Image (cartoon, rainbow, N blue to C red; front, side, top):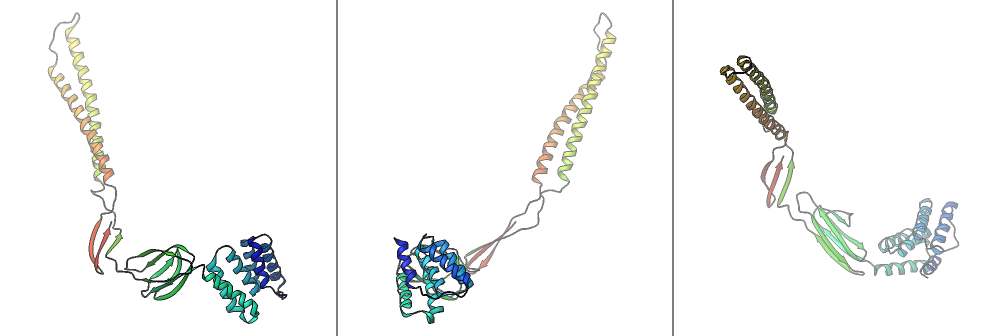
Length: 304
């Protein structure tokens, strides 16, 4: 079974020495049990890490590296083994040192290396992990598969490149960013209105006044029509006879009625126009576009 192979790997680096901190020793034992008996690699690594935080030891680092290796995190395992050799080489036996180096050689065949070269002061990231800011020449260890490199620099075009990494492969990649050909800069200008602020209210007020005047004239015309009808009825008597009535009163009532209708129509149109004016007269930015030189191209500055 896979965990049994890993258990043998742990045993190959074990010694009879114990940690001086009892809690660190307990965590080491717990991590070893979780790793060898339960194959609980994540929990085992957390126990090894807590042990190392309490009392740094090569055994804890070895356990951390083994859990990384079992989980397929070969880059993390490789880095941890290198740290083990650099920090505890003096206390390792020849057999232990040989075992760790053999694991390192095996892990090197499972990863790829990209030699990044950036002479510009660009910020570089791989798979959203920050790599650093140029100028730099840096080997980056990556798991096999597809990775995305992004480099940014003010005043330059952003570089986005997808690379395919193969196990055991070592390649070089130069980061070169060209100047921006078009720069779009957005600035907000003060808000303005199309018309004076009072204009929609004035039109609305005028419409309301015309509508009210139309209502008053309508009422007056109806009163005059009734007065005309009453005068005709009184003059005709009973039984009624044909009479001409007060034609001036009748004409005045007709004129008042027509003026009332006109007031309704004009007032309604004015109210509609006032509502439209109120809507279109809300404060808004006025766009402005400026074209200015930018490097080898031009920049478009939009202000609104």
